[in-house]
Image (tube, rainbow, N blue to C red; front, side, top):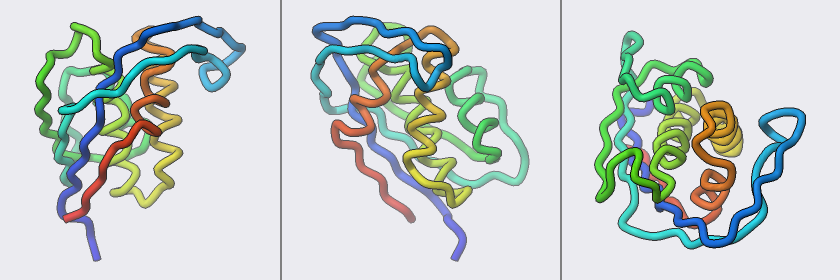
Length: 141
């Protein structure tokens, strides 16, 4: 049965204590510390699309490209991108989770893709893992 729509709720993240840890590659780069995940967070709907769509949001476009998926993405959040709260990580993670479901790939692969995007774009080192393990919700429709 084909996936018609995926609804994803990703909590946002506020870092409290933070120590960056840089490795030789993006997967070994991250941070030590603690923070809190908060709700409401980012709510995304992801639908398969026939052809590529460019959103002009690097985190979204790169997640779709990396997972090889064409998708229609819509989202809402109580905060805007660029004001903190781990919003860029939430966009990367939510998009990657939806794309992984469409591509029938493991969700942990989506989290890894989102983390690498955050590291490469220098927008976060610990938000993805906090949001991934901090209690997201995924619904298929």
